[in-house]
Structure formats: C-alpha cells, structure tokens
Length: 153
Length: 426
Ligand SMILES: Cc1ncc(COP(=O)(O)O)c(C=O)c1O
Image (tube, rainbow over all chains, first blue to last red; front, side):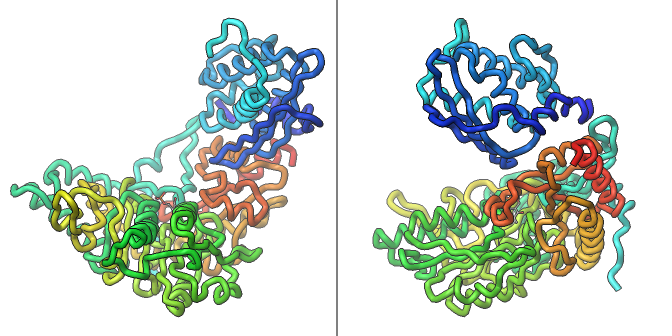
C-alpha cells in the first residue's frame, strides 16, 4: 500500500477542479462540520426543488481528501431523489468502514469508488466522511425525509 | 565545551527506532514534541519495580509497601532536583493538562467557596468580575481552555499578550495587558507550535509587580533545555513526563511551597486528607493534598530513570544538539520553494519544533507523503488553534526532534516535502 493508491487520479482531479462548489441561493438546511484534529472545514446546504429533488451546495477548506469527497458528493447527490441520495451516502459510509477490502459499486458511487484506498488510512477516513456527515445533518435540519427503503435507522 | 551527543549509540537504547513502517521503510521519528520515545532504561525501571517492589504507597504496614513508598518518594526527589526544586514542592498528576487544571481549579474552587462564606481562603485565589487572567496568543489549549472556564465561573476577564509576525511575544503589550486587575499570568515557556522560547522571567517579574501569581507551561522546555524552576521566577510550573523519555500517565506540577500551601485541593478523596468527619474534612499538606487516590508509582519510577538518562547525557549537551538540528531544519526547510515557516526563522531563543505550510498543499497531504517515506510528523493545529488563526493558516506540518535524531532525518523529511510538491504539481 503506498500513497499513490490513496491519491488516485480521480481524487486529485476533484481536488483541483471541484464540481458544484457554490452555496445555494435559498437553502432550507445547512450544516458546518469541522475535523477538530486537522482543521478541515466544510459547509453543506440542501433544499428540495419543485420536482422534489435534492439540491446541494457547499464550500470548504482542507485537505485533498475532504475537499475531493465534497466534490464527489455534490456530483452524486445534487439533483437526485432524496432517498437515492441517502443510499449513495450509506454506500459511501460503508465503503469508508471497509478497511479497504470492499469492491465498491461504480453504478452507486460513481467517482466515489476512488476513495476505497482511503479506508486503509484510519486518520483519513474522517476527512472523507466530513462532507457526507454535513450532508446528513443538513438534511435533518431541513426536515428532508431520507429514509431509504429497507435501510436501517 | 559542551560534549556532543553520540546519536548512533543513543539510538541503540530505543528499540522502537529500529522498526520499519509502511513498506519496510526505516522509521524517521520527528514527532517528539507530541511524545518522546522511551529508552530501555525507563522500561526496565518500570518492569523492575513491578517485579520486585509493587505495592500501594503510603498505606499498609508491610515491607513491600515500605519499598514501594521509598521508590515513589525517591523518584520525586530526583525529578524535583532535576529542575532545581525540593521534593515537597513537586506534585504528581496525570499529565501537564491536569497540572494546569489543578492550578486553574484552585482559583475557581476558592472563588466558589468564598461566595459561600468560606473564610480560610487565600485572597490571591479569589476572583470576581473586574479581575483579569493573562495568557498569550501562543498557548496550547491546555493553558487556555481551563482559564476560559475559570473566567466563565468567576466573571473574571481573559486577556492575552499577542504575538508578532515572526512568532515572538509582543512584549510592547506586556505592561498594558498585565495591570493592577491581573490576578494570574500563565505563559508557555517553549511554544509547541511556533518553537519560540519565551522570556518567561520578564513576564513573571511583571506579574509579580502587580501582585499576580505566575504560572509557566514548561512542557516543551524541561525535556529539551536545562530548566531551573527558581530561575524562571514562576510560582507554579507544569510539564509532562511522556515528552522527556518518561512514561505516559504522569504529569508534574512544581510550586513554591508557600503558594502550594495556600491552594485548595482539586481532586479530592483518599490519601489527600488530614482528618475526615461525616460533615467535613481537613487536608494534608502539599504535595499530598493534590494527590488523591492511588498514585502512578511505576510511572514515577520510570520518569526517575528518564531523568537519570538525561542527566547522564547532560542537558547542556541535549540543548546544544537540538540547537544544531533546529538550525539545519530552519535552513533546509526554509530554503524550499513555496514553503513558509510559521514561527521564528532565526535560530535564537528557538526550540526544535519547526512548523511550516506548503503553498497549494494541505498539511494533511504533506504528512501523508512523509508517512509514506517512514517519516512521522504531526499535522494539524497542534492544540493551538487560535495561534493558527493568528497566522491565517488552517493547520501546519510540524517536525520536532530529540536526542535520537540527526541531520539525515531532516533530509529525509525535506525530500518527502519536495516529492509531495511534485506529485500534486504545486
Ligand atoms: C506546550 C504544551 N502544553 C501542554 C501540553 C499538554 O500536555 P499533555 O497532553 O501531556 O497534558 C503540551 C503537549 O501536548 C504542550 O506541548
């Protein structure tokens, strides 16, 4: 295991060219999360559009893993049904707890599969999860029902 | 002439330094400001204590209890002497954080008791609105958060001495920040994030001018330079065993006898009492007043061995060795393109913690690259978040050396920084 497998090209690309990195004009829920050990910060905002799809905005500062993860999150969940967003989020959380042994499903996680190597570095899992924790918290604050079918509470 | 350290010989005393990490890379340990490694002499001392003399101290009428008590109190005497203190003025705690809390709680406990009519309290420890507490802008959270709590409980105001752009205390503020309202001044001797060695004597003298008590956080100085608690001019001095080759689980608080005697207890219970009735109790004299419960005996014995080890090397030689390494680190890291040192760049009044930021790279990513090469450094805010904010950086990468490092360790780190810059294209 070396550092190149942690920093896959997809991660570097999202870090250098973040997708959807803007705040929403009218958020209905917002969450600011910090990683107190290293100072990574991310603010995630959510709202539902007229079709009932979730809109996601964010900004942040921090390491490549946390910021690339926020970019991937935005790419995967912005504009989708809240329950679908929740299943992506759960899949990502599960991937992070896999100790690097998982074979992630690209259909579900998209570019999120590039984070499989992160799960082998316990100190970096928190970085990768930060935006997804903020997403969940923002949804709760916005009162968005994310209960995916068959998902445990 | 100060003798130089034989690093190759010293390294043989630290088994952990010969292990490999990540892909069989030799370990390059540059995180001693967080915690130092432990020599065999310390491990042996703890083991021998457990094998031959383990018993509860200051209790029991048997021979083992006597021997354990003797080991514990002899350790106290040796550790106190190491910093020029008397054994009765040295309190064992869990770590420096607890030592500083013990002091902070003396103020909030005295203030709370005074509010309920307690009459045997020393007025120096009683705070009320209008009083001030002074720290600096380069404190470790351990010497900041406890004082914020004291202020919240007593109505006192927290003030701080600022820092200059080059990482020094702004001494121009000394006389205005510390004034007649000030009841306690608590400052770090050697900053764990900036590396600055502060002129604590000057600050303590100013504190005493206005009849305030003076506290020094000596966590990073006692392990790395000769420290005489009397010369610091402080009333109370806190530090930790684990940063000076000793075990975890042991902290130190030295105090002037008269000041310790005037302080109410912090943690209460067994071993710290004089007499106990159902309604009330009276307390033992220091240091026992501050050592409630069964203490860390084996750890004290371990630290005593660490002190012996450092004395054999000579603290002057330790300081000279680190001064040389600090010079090399400042020069080689400072010369890198796109790298900025946070803290004094001049190797004067400077400890071996060297913090830096790399343009376009987050410290976490720098640390990861170094780790990949076997180099252990600390990244983050180093428990000095307000200091990071002062320098407008979210975090830094920090390299810190000790007796078992040499210049080649710094070179490996420098190569890792350059490799990270290359990989990320910055
Ligand atoms: C300057 C300084 N003060 C206080 C502390 C707290 O020490 P400990 O964590 O051992 O209580 C540290 C180290 O972490 C430090 O470097």
